[in-house]
Length: 246
Image (cartoon, rainbow, N blue to C red):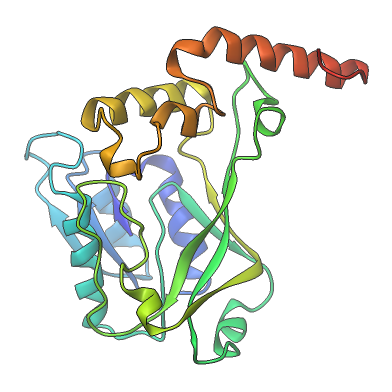
């Protein structure tokens, strides 16, 4: 994983990985909030590269592609059976014996797709998820290790799984595995993230051409926030009364 100022939720993220991972490798990207101490004290964190915290605080000062490539090369010095990738705001939640399920997969399976679920905890708009969108997608978060796998080349918004992974086999969906993402769990957090991404990538070049506001704001543009809130209010009222929204 790559972490920057993981905050109070970092221990839960590490504990979720530690249920199934023998070693946790981390790139600590200029953290100043005590993240380094958490990493030092966690028994499953066995390899950490720290970027100096006094470097400039610009987002993605080191391109995401370089951070991912570093993590992949760190894995080359461990050579595990499988690799799990998580962000510092994502908790891995797996039912049953994940190790046994992975071990039982045929050799032609190169990676596993599972549900990426965005949690929601906004007291002002408590039902925006699921009323305005499911906030769930399928992502490859676990893959079979091979030496020399390559990351993408973009400064941000690369797939976290290797660029050349499917050269070595297919991806398979597995039920009962979720990656729960808490980083976008309020409307204000999503708006702030949209504004950051629009500043860094105004033409959506690095986001596969998709507009950041429509992707994160349930299909609405940033200048349509009033309509989003009004539509949410109508749907929430209709849910309460049991009538169809107008």
